[in-house]
Image (cartoon, rainbow, N blue to C red; front, side, top):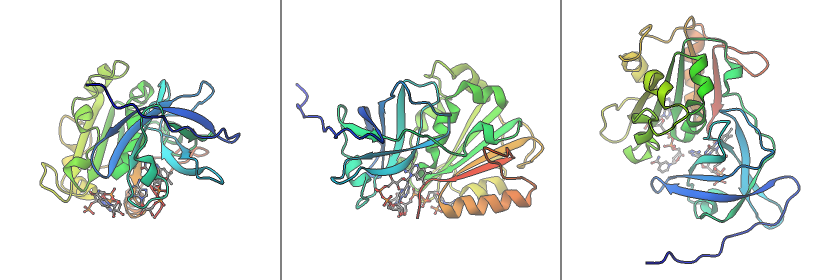
Length: 271
Ligand SMILES: Cc1cc2nc3c(=O)[nH]c(=O)nc-3n(C[C@H](O)[C@H](O)[C@H](O)COP(=O)(O)OP(=O)(O)OC[C@H]3O[C@@H](n4cnc5c(N)ncnc54)[C@H](O)[C@@H]3O)c2cc1C
Ligand SMILES: NC(=O)c1ccc[n+]([C@@H]2O[C@H](COP(=O)([O-])OP(=O)(O)OC[C@H]3O[C@@H](n4cnc5c(N)ncnc54)[C@H](OP(=O)(O)O)[C@@H]3O)[C@@H](O)[C@H]2O)c1
């Protein structure tokens, strides 16, 4: 059967933003989807950064911050997005199709970058919901495995179907030719689902307290230790504030691009 023919939605040129084509779209459930856009030749970013993306809204482009889920070397730019039912951007963005166009900001920024951390041996990437997105970029960047001997992604979600990229991470990125070998030895994935039955059901703080986060094959201390560990946090305001307080109480110092430290934070959304 032939696929239905649809006309791509194009956007007017805008001097402030790149106009880029959507390459593919993958829906995870009614709240979440991923998509990729073409990467303009002049677009540079560091793994873990975010950028503004958006659509035309008549008078001016409607733009929102989005973490880039692809690593810095990738040919396409991938994103993981929420679908907010009455959200100005995502009520429309969730309907994009390959061939449609989006706006892409010209200046990626952010603190969830290796440059904002001091050297360490274990890197813990703690995320809730779409806070996973910047960590998808970092875990697919070979540089991260050179800097850290063990890389742990913890992803906390409400429902099993919110576990985007579960299969890829469970397989330790085996289909990614650039990091498959490093990830097989160094990458660890700990998903947890807090509102449906699943093998892990506690919030991340519960997994730290009961030791799940430090179970074999991970080696090293059975707690977060500023002597060996570096931490990145991405989630709701409440989540990053709770964890920042907890890390500071353990002796971790917050880092930034100007002053690298033991942990860095970024909110996954405003509100
Ligand atoms: C630094 C930064 C990085 C971001 N990266 C991403 C990303 O990679 N993926 C992504 O989907 N969003 C991300 N966001 C949020 C994004 O900018 C928009 O808020 C989101 O696309 C919804 O846009 P909207 O116009 O539909 O609704 P908005 O008017 O922006 O939001 C409406 C409400 O929906 C809720 N909401 C918004 N975004 C989320 C979310 N991601 N998860 C859960 N609830 C949410 C909040 O309660 C918010 O008040 C990021 C935000 C910031 C500040
Ligand atoms: N995901 C959905 O099914 C869904 C459906 C409809 C609407 N939404 C809307 O989308 C927004 C965000 O939803 P979301 O599911 O992406 O994010 P969320 O509510 O932040 O939940 C994501 C995960 O983070 C955990 N969490 C929340 N606060 C935490 C904290 N302070 N410390 C540690 N863990 C914490 C949650 O555990 P708990 O489960 O214990 O809170 C859950 O496992 C909400 O405004 C919601 O109304 C989401």
